[in-house]
Image 1: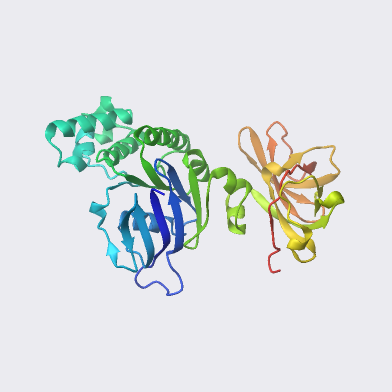
Image 2: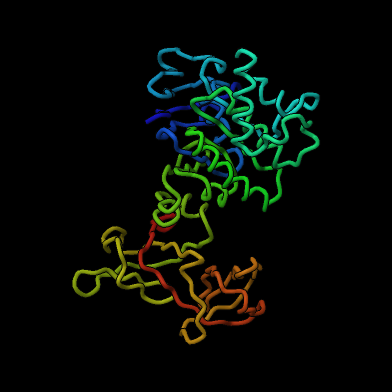
Length: 361
């Protein structure tokens, strides 16, 4: 792996002995790929990013890039940030308002000869699509353009790894989505390996080759977006990613050795990768039902009452209550504009199940 983090832990002075900001995190990021860390506030994702940059010492574990050991808590090794050849892009851009766009980008490569500095500055400005704005002041450009200046400045020294700490958090939603795709294209063109922190799941899914979900300092899962969504490794990941609920269920033996999952929405059959009944005591478990597992069907025998609805343009997100009291959520096309309090028919359309032990079991 190009970036390898092994059992990395970070503790801050004065923090509780039992609570690490980062706790025994292990992950690998291949060369040229973009990894993304997501999780709730205070989960440790920015602390891990700062440890990779060398801004925080490791309390335990090791970090290496391209085979070079940068940090080793056991051996007492800690390469200073300025010697790691790592670029960083921050939330607030940190541009110099009194310098031109060109001078901002050239700031980190002042050690180069003047001609080489001008060539490299022009090269990265063209890469981010701002070659025409080289002589303008940062405040004369939009927020999205300023973010691209910050990216160009970080890329100018040709870092072997780029770190991005919520780079789009101050931008509006539409611009964030567009810039996220632009960022991925720019990094692919430059062949840069990058690790990014964001709190936006859709942003992470849009750009990440690999995505890590963090919780209370620990890395719950490090995987591609499809696997995180459809094969969550832990209950926290299942709950954090996407929209869904945990419904009580029981796994029983079906015909021909197949398993059947009994749920409040009826039996789920012909399932792929279904656990055997003996996986849980009495087969009793909870099944994850995503919003896209629930289909609105007025002919279905199962009825549910609409408790809340959220308009999302092409669809509604309905929060529904079954007659037995269980709650589910469903994506429904927005031309099915039912009212809160109305009863509608629903059915489960699931080809594989994600199950967990019942809480407290």
